Image 1 (cartoon, one colour):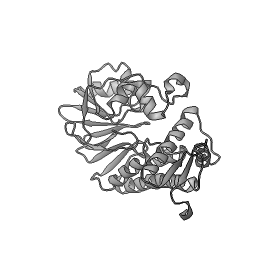
Image 2 (cartoon, one colour; image 1 turned 135 degrees about the vertical axis):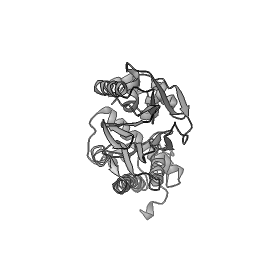
Image 3 (cartoon, one colour; image 1 turned 60 degrees about the vertical axis):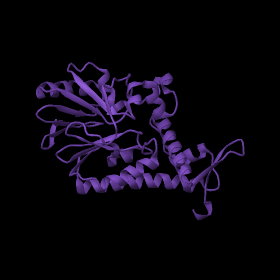
Image 4 (tube, helix red, strand yellow; image 1 turned 135 degrees about the horizontal axis):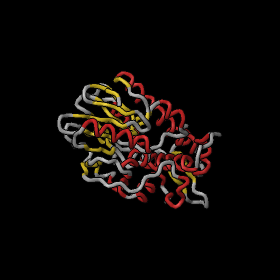
Length: 293
């Protein structure tokens, strides 16, 4: 565990876990997954010797799996009210993430986590003790970020590190249009240090560059969907265009790519930028103004 600033500390990983320690409590944000992380958290809790509050920023398995293990210390788990169902019910979590009941094909799951109990929920934007929460929808409906009194902001999966953006075929967000709006909002948030869930810690000046890199990646993805839909393409044709000869590393990653594309098509249709023509046996996605592309 390393000090980020003041009473705010970090345990690096994918995702990283953020800690804030005051006189009354030890706050753990996104405990993560894996046996190694379990041992690390036990050690940190014993050393702090304070009541523990665990904050789960969203329902994805890689952020919550630890809580299905025996941590050997008492804690209170808190999440947003919107994402609680995905944390407590595995089938709902998988369905919301992958769009299909992938629990019946467990080998395809990239991360696995049993149901996890949430002790308390908050509305997005409510404070948790000294910590301010910020609603960051898009990646999931109820994702929250955490701002500590030290002006350290944990952005969860609203912001990805550059290597993550390079290594994955498509930035995964359940609602890419909403995720883009969230990124735009983060430009104006008052913080000094930004901690992505997946990626290195950055000072504010670098953070703005990283946020812009994420914005550009999402805009490219959404613009490509509109452009390639053109005068009409099937969903599978659009998937092939987006992959552009690249291959997924696993079945789970491929299904996530499909889900990201579906989310993008749906939100763009909601904005009137594309339409779905169902007049033939193979439905075609079309740009609303293909001649302008």
